[in-house]
Length: 67
Image 1 (cartoon, rainbow, N blue to C red):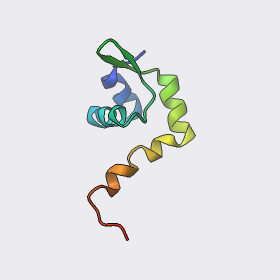
Image 2 (image 1 turned 135 degrees about the vertical axis):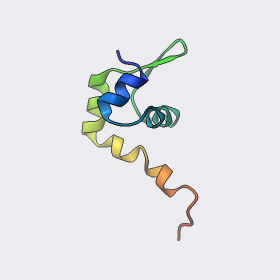
Image 3 (image 1 turned 90 degrees about the horizontal axis):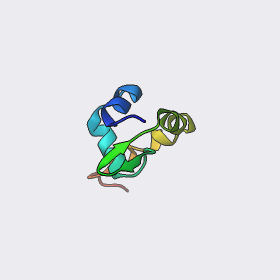
């Protein structure tokens, strides 16, 4: 299992992005005590499924007026 820093490097995003995805419960993760752990195979499957493309959609629309 990997920690947040390792999975951020694996995915190619910042640790802040990983934290945001955890908060939104979009990225597959396991909580071990106070730590978040990731299986690279689960994260890879999540990315390949296309679900990761939806992870930031709410961020891009927040604060904007929609018609």
